[in-house]
Length: 377
Ligand SMILES: NC(=O)C1=CN([C@@H]2O[C@H](COP(=O)(O)OP(=O)(O)OC[C@H]3O[C@@H](n4cnc5c(N)ncnc54)[C@H](O)[C@@H]3O)[C@@H](O)[C@H]2O)C=CC1
Ligand SMILES: O=C(CO)COP(=O)(O)O
Image (cartoon, rainbow, N blue to C red; front, side):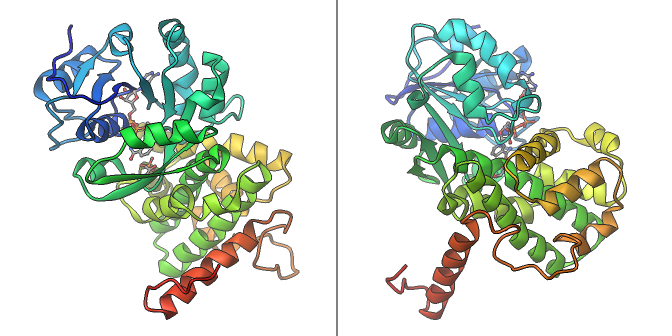
């Protein structure tokens, strides 16, 4: 099948994975002027996107750009590309990269991860799996993250995201391609913080879903979000991230969006658990990828290795394993140690809490100044 499009002038890009996020990101790129070819696993889906400019299963009611093409043949999607965007479930990334590698061997395209998971078997972040499997220079790899619920963006609601790469040049090149009138991209070089922000907020969103399902209210949710951000920051910093990244779009921003929205699959999975469904029932009911469910165990393993305490994530795991009644999750926001704990961090071993305090102080100062920056850090 030869993909059909009228040809815009921007970079040639392939998007691998035509689920809700891959297709939405393809639309972002095409609306920004890139020449986009989507790759879908199923020929019928590729055909629907290519011919009807629709993806009725994942983005009902959305018209895709006329310039967007699609194929189910990898070799066609990857021909002469400048950038490749990857958006398959994290647990399937490695097998997909094995198929991509021979087709990219004489191409130095930038490789961009849109995914928010860690590999269950290795605990590796997606950019690390890409580096291993494609054996490519990490300066060619970028990741995109932020408060990015696909359907809202597909409806062209104004949204920001961050593009991160070890190479500032790569981050900027990708950010230039992935922006348009409704999607704004910032850049940073903290790949670890940017990726872990996306992974960890999923786990906190599952916790929020659980207490929502139980019927608890806003105090419980605000407590979990706030303490969840401390857990996220401690974990990410202990694993090499800059604490500021966790206060940005890929951390706090995404945490707010995912914890608040019924569109979030992680939040939805948690809600079903809170309503009493078993893990197996929840997996059966989910029509789309909820990355948090597969990330809990490897994240807790990494937390143990880096001696970070994550009581909320531990309790999510206990609920998933059927070892904790969802109703019992809320009072256990901290350790059960009788000694009252300082609020700053769980163990105080990372600087994350200091950054959190500074960020909250800045927000408070701004609020007092009627939204104007007080001009100090
Ligand atoms: N949907 C969203 O709002 C956002 C999702 N993400 C991330 O994007 C990634 C992809 O998620 P979605 O597109 O939302 O998931 P989805 O469930 O909507 O789509 C997944 C796509 O991957 C395909 N797929 C499943 N198994 C596969 C395999 N073994 N090989 C190749 N393709 C396979 C499915 O057919 C489907 O087209 C996840 O890591 C998610 O965390 C990130 C930001 C926003
Ligand atoms: O990452 C997301 C929003 O930024 C999407 O969250 P869910 O995967 O929970 O739907």
